[in-house]
Length: 410
Ligand code: GAF
Image (cartoon, rainbow, N blue to C red; front, side):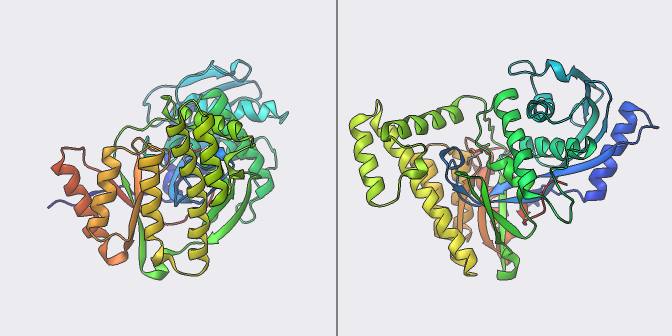
């Protein structure tokens, strides 16, 4: 049997060399841009909780989006991407507005726009990007792009928010993350919740980021599976995944309507146990579509509890017991939140059948990636089994990576 496809991360020097070379090709060899990069992320647990004021637990991936950028004196933005050979896109910062920019440039120009909206002294720039974060894989290639732009503009225009690579400024990075979220929500038009931007800007190497979306506070939870003989296997199902096709927005709208019905600011206020039971009873009486409201709220409240439970296990050095939490998260996302798909279900089931301790879809869903907690010696076996299950069903071959907790945008 063939070796399943691996998604390799570039080293920092390799990524930097790529964007410097591309910058010279597009904007002239004499130009001397700066170079920055930002990671994609994978969420360990806490899915569709961020826009409900809940908890989530992502790690930053070693896979990064790289940018070379040179500030300009005027407000022209010129952009090129290795993924779009030959083209240089041009727009004016003053013309960036909701609905005015389409495609990938919205993520770049949107960050400049959001920083300028905050009164920060951002002007035009020339920039090129390249990335080894797989696109559309639910690993936050968009947030990686936004975060790379944010740290580049911070440095190039002297905003002083990101801090140094040795000493990242978390308060400043929270401001940058908020600008990235505005870019994504208002300029790119994806109503996402903020986990991904925080992961890319605020995570720490060798730690998972416990993000409390109620107040944007974080705690860095030590995360080193290799020390326990374990690995976090990411399966990119290569099934289509989109955050702008209405399904994501619909989930969010249902949660917000449920919160209004319950008279709470966010579903975070619904406590598990009796609180949840009372909330579900109230939703059954007062919702337009009670069955849907009940299931969505049950997912959110139980998922927040699972984040706390996983953090407890990690803090106690008991990561090998985390499998059932991942399994329960997947079942809840599949049955109650209804954001899984057949490829994700097959990935999760075939990984478990081949010996994974637990597995779940990760990210927004409807495609994208799954994660599996696997004994280090079993990784190849699980990959083979998942690849075979995909082939047997006629799905496109999946791609794999073993995730470790890497560092933030810099
Ligand atoms: C996507 C969104 F961008 C995040 O904000 C989050 O809601 C996630 O889906 C689901 O947990 O990645």
